[in-house]
Length: 111
Length: 118
Image (cartoon, rainbow over all chains, first blue to last red; front, side, top):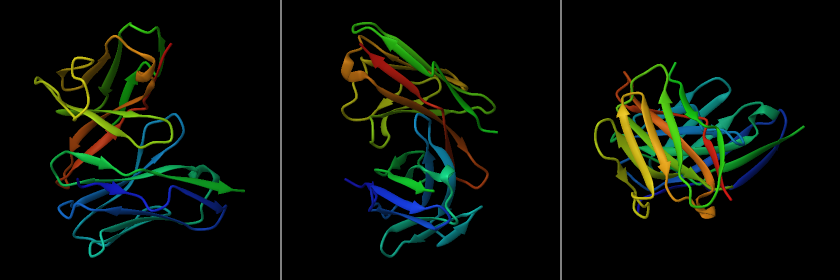
């Protein structure tokens, strides 16, 4: 069936470096994508979203890139900080109020 | 805004007993709430979609008689794990859906409930 997946299950970066977390999706009908951050023992927190009519969206220290040609989504975190250590999930939605999550990537920031 | 709470945050129960978890949208009305289960080091797995005033829609493989969902108001949904077994031990997370002005549904997640069945 259609699914959302991640290329890298773990990512370790040095504090201050930029992080890039990738996600592949297979449902070409998906038109809304969201990145969530989940810290240990907590629920997912919204980070940033992007609609399919855009290929880039920027927030505070974060940028989401969408490549519909290859069905690829990425989250870029600038100047990664220890507080960014968490599991990051991408999710897809096709405006039917149904969201599907990818497997998640654990980001570890080394001091 | 868009805060979702869950209660309790953690619970330990004996095998065979039932446990109720509450999910509340604190500052908005949510016609739809979702229940997820998450095992360690795994992604969120959607269990069921709950609409106010109607029966929940369960995902394939989720036993509706074991995981009872009630969505009695626009701000409250409950999940009851009946006759709990150790394999039901997991992190249960709810979310509430809000149809944003931008035209898409946004989901806001609760903090989760850690269930341990002994």
